[in-house]
Length: 323
Image 1 (cartoon, rainbow, N blue to C red):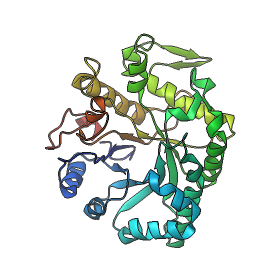
Image 2: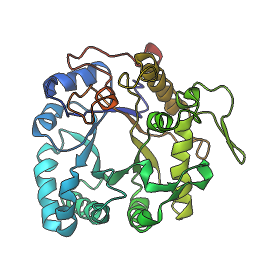
Image 3: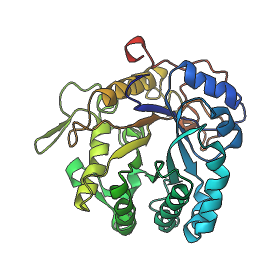
Image 4: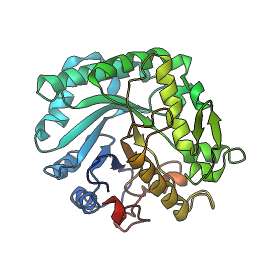
């Protein structure tokens, strides 16, 4: 892992019944010099194991808790007192994410209030440095092609404006999940595999003066364009999930393709930004640390791991020049 940049992390998903102990997992992160971890919800055993590890943590709020936390500052205070305060000084929380991919949807309305109340609760105990944000997927975009046409769908426009109006003065990022694999799998007749795998040697999409050699950049810049349209171009994006399955859907989901995609993407985000923001370095989380056998539906969802549950690598994307 790139020791100085603090750009690349790995999601620690736990939808499985055969994973190693949290202590062993933390040691595996440290052994591989993985500097950031995304947790989808608070887990006392994992948070205890993180004490003193110096791993930078993005901690998720469960979707089902958003309504309560949005409506009550006291409930938000209690959530922080339970899940953050006990680890103050020992666990390096960097972000709290209010919900995972609930925009668009019935829970979207609760995201702005939750962000505000959790932020207030953190400030009250001297942890205002921890960023509070949310995680959105490409479904929040009504238009995403070409990238410059990116726009939030009408049903989420007000919510996204509220959220970004909070994020901007605090300089908190907007987290986005970006999966070129699913875009490719849904339309392989029109999306070249090399374009999805960062292997194109000439532009596949030309958008005005901007050339796109890979689908990842095009998807990210669709979000950048959407932010520009609501006068929030200064909002930083961070990539909260991205990955490629190593099995589950024929030849396209091979170990070789998964390794190629993740290796090329890691190198890409360490070296440059996207065409619309070439100088921005995108903090990025790979999904996921382990193959998770209880993920549904069965198939590719169970094969995004960098490691098997026995902690043997499915493939290796860390190499000497990245250390």
